[in-house]
Length: 568
Image (tube, rainbow, N blue to C red; front, side, top):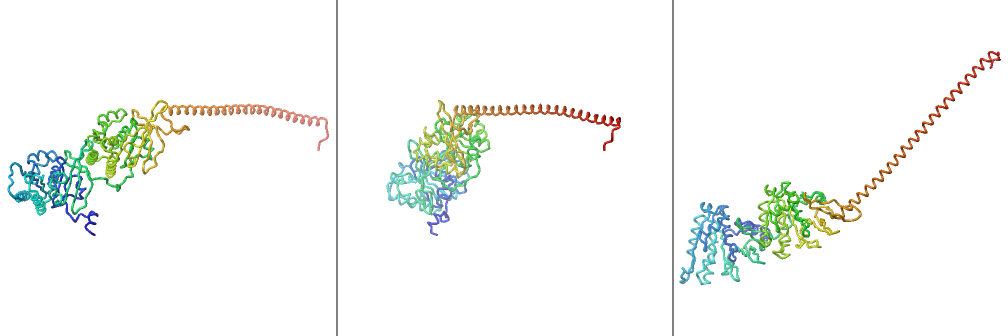
């Protein structure tokens, strides 16, 4: 197998690497910076080069690799003050002799250029600093300052090349920062050619919004991410978002998570959303998107699941107050540590910084549920394509973490698709509508799609009540979809008609019973009359029989008296 094939297959045994400890960067570089080689970190002023370098040194010291930070611009005290808030252990690491600072003061007015010069003195100074702490890492910040007092460009180039080679011979992993030139990555346009790895930082301003980006321009002997990655600098240091899109190899779950609304669960195959799936809730203004999201969050917290609510329109206090009016007490979940709000205006950051912030908070809080309300507001800070790209990466990231996400999005009146147009990315899409009829507005929901389950195709009316959202049962009458007072009136009419039918049936049943009773009375009278007549006839028969017997006896007696012949 060739070296190229090994690289493509991720075989990193060819080149040893030094882990930077900067979150996300080691993923992009497939393991860190080239070990024992110089890396150039270049960019314009204010893009984060010195912070990057300091993070590299501090994380290395924390991992057991001592380092030397050589500054040509800032004093040691200024550096400590600048970075102590990001790295509280900085002084301890210095006391433990794991980090050494050296400030090389260079002032143009103090330099008198006479003949050729070289960097032998600097090499001796660097060598001493490296040996004093047994350094495995070194930072030179910034290299241009070293040559700021001299004008012999050819000589500068030669000395720069010699400096990089010297660092490589020392076997230390070096980060050298450099200022960007007008048409080159660095001011002298040489460092990028002699460095084994070049990382470019920039912070362009688009639509008055700044976004910090990082790009690996080259990396000798290693495969690496080639895209431009956003990164965030906050009180914890640098976080790089390594994803452009994670891909489609994430695992899926067979488990479900309740929507928080019993009848909506029934419409979703009786179980709710798939755990780890993405849900889009679209609707016109005032259709109840945030209320649905809040009820979903409330149900999840009741089951002990953790949620992050990213709000781009309302403050957390406003959301909690509003949801309390419909019977949802979200504050209790905040107090119990199950719910975390993060509310900002979309215009506070660029899209990529929003993505990095979401990425960072999800990694810190490890939620089961993420709500983004609403994603449609993001179009105020980027084009439609940019927003779709950002959301695609976010959804892939959340799916990879098995986090169920629910995003709300505003759609224009009369349109189903949202302004953002990301419905094709989502696993489940529920559309909320406000319908005007008979002088009133009524809300309906419609499950447009839900991948992997047999969901209802019925439009349902729902009400926002003091006890939360209540979905009405499906109307099965002959008049199609009815909502609001029309539905209530029709249901009342059908109840009245049903009652009349029941009363008619009961009347007929009572008529049958009455006739049955009358018939039985008549039968009883006939039977009684028959029995009376039968008794009379039997009495007459007995009298006639008795008379006949008496007559026969009298005849026998008369025959004896008259001595009549005996009968044979």
